[in-house]
Structures are given as structure tokens and as C-alpha cells.
Length: 253
Image (tube, rainbow, N blue to C red; front, side, top):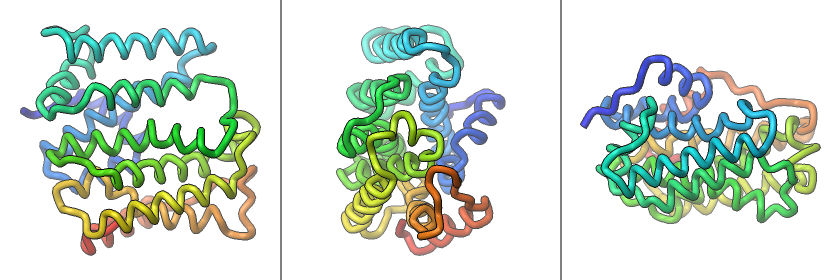
């Protein structure tokens, strides 16, 4: 089945999740649409903190999505929404475990919790429950069974994202976790994933290709002269695309 999104939804995903979208374009058209639908769903969850003024309202939005997911898996109908109807077909046709979807919603709901991560382990769990699970689902909807290294790769991406966002969160959710710890954990997860994956099969490459951007991100983040509290990493779209093309040619991330 072809999964078609409205143009405005597709555009929002391209703007908000450019690195995953770049990777998705290595897929054939139908597979790419599946990935775009998944990322559109994830965007609905990820953007909640920007739309609400207090955690309780955010909790209501996340509960709405939990109920929609329950309808997808437990009933023959689903509430009307530009994402939910095609999402139902996608999740059921590709036998995506409901636990993964619930885990993703729970992981994203942590974004509205004002408490900082108390330990690095909490930051790692957050990254695993968001970026790690999302990458597993992406591989699954491309018709493959994701092994443990896929979640490690996604977790590394999530930790790298936390490091990149350190200027915004070092006084809030990341106030109890050091920048160096986050970068080291991201590198360790990436190294484990890379060793476990070896060569990447062409059919799942579009779901994990952006993992290849982790080393250059970390290289910039860990420069001696880099100030994580005030500076942001700059990495041009052309440089990213070149890196992804090289990864595609080599069959490795």
C-alpha cells in the first residue's frame, strides 16, 4: 500500500527532521513514504513541548496519542487525524510491536518533565526510548528485523542530539550531567553499533544512514576550543549529503 501524506505535513517533517529525511531519500518511493509517515508521527510527539504552556496540557496531548494507538491495535476504527489513518495501516501491515510505540510516546513525554536527568544513565535511557526505538521502528517498516545494534545506533544519535542541544539545556534537563560524559557515551554507543553492524544491507540503509553523521558531529563537539554552553555545531547540508553518499557507496555507517 502507498502511504501518502499531505504536502504541508511532508514539508514540516523536512524542516524539523532534515537529517532523517536526507537518509530516507536513499529508499525507493514507497519505502520512503513509509519512513516519512513514521517521522511525521514522531514529529507530532516531539513538538508537544513547543505547543503547551504547562506540563499538564502536554500530558493530555500525549494521552490523546496513547488512546489513538490503543484504537489502532485494539479496534477496527481510529480517530480522524491526518496521521492516524495511514499510521494504522503502516503499523499493522508491518507488524510493529505496540510496546515500541508506547515506549516512544513515553520517551517523548519526558520532554515536558521539568526535572533534570539525575545521572548519565537516565540520559542514555531517554535516548534509547526516543531515538533508539524510532530507529528500530524505521528498520521494521522497511521489512527487516532490527537487532540490538540498531537501537545502539539510535541511542548514539539521541545522545549526540543532547550534546548538540547543550547550550539550551545545560541549565535545565542536562544540568546534572556533564557535556563530556554525554559525548563519551554517544561515541561508545556508536562504536558498539558499528562493530555489531559491520556492512549495512541496502534495504535498511535509509533507516539508519544518518548514523554516519555522528562522527563528524562529535568531532566538532569535542574540539578543545569548543564551548558547549554557548556554541552550536555548524555542519552544512552539502557536507552532510556528501558524508551520506560516501556511507552509501561503502555500505557502512
